[in-house]
Image: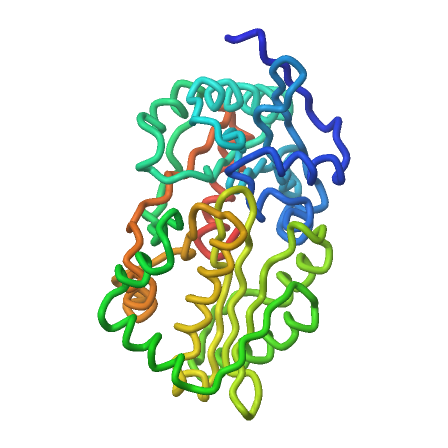
Length: 345
């Protein structure tokens, strides 16, 4: 164990935590207190920080989910821990130390089931599974391999345009020929316009399990200005027809949700919005654009749309968990497996 590292738990307020996020390339929406408060366990957030020579080098926000009638629960870290400092190389030893400290705090001291959904891709870190296993973690059972399209924004706009699939470029040119107006911002009025388009899309597609856009509106309201999601709305002469929402923190923009109504389909507005968002991310200095997940088998239409940008098809890292082998934790783990089968955490 590297004793040059020091660990603190729950000795930071939300404002300080939010400012610390500026220090990490892997900072993301899901590690903000505003996000944490609006999902299960949001009434019990825990913050663990690792320092080296008094400088914060790794941190993780953890949601604590208490299970009724059992003295225990689940500690859930989504898209954490953060361990990639600005322009620093990936440090597997630092990740290993953080995982051991999280195991000690949440599994040993608090006797919780600890689950981690890492914020990196399986192609990013060699031997990531071994790092987790050496710290007492195991891959979560029954998990499906999740993939996304990652667009490298180091290329110029001309180069990115030349990489587009022929079909994607055709739709983009078509959208540019319409008299579409693009507005953008972070205000709640933009979010409300987006939600109206989104609800129209839900009715058109008859989606059974839409994203909880109202929850994201609450998150947007509470986020500090520099962390707020970017909203773009496309309109024709009759009004708004499509919208897109992206969260951009660290060195990556993450596609959160998009919506198109019937008029938007006719004008290919979603193509223009994606391109405008790429232009904005590049103008702000972001290196990557994560298009938010693909499922070639079950959602081929969305796959065709996102893959047409000709980014890298990449796999999210596995989820891992750790627990102590006793009857109570076995009951918690079994109950949580059942709950995850029928709902989202």
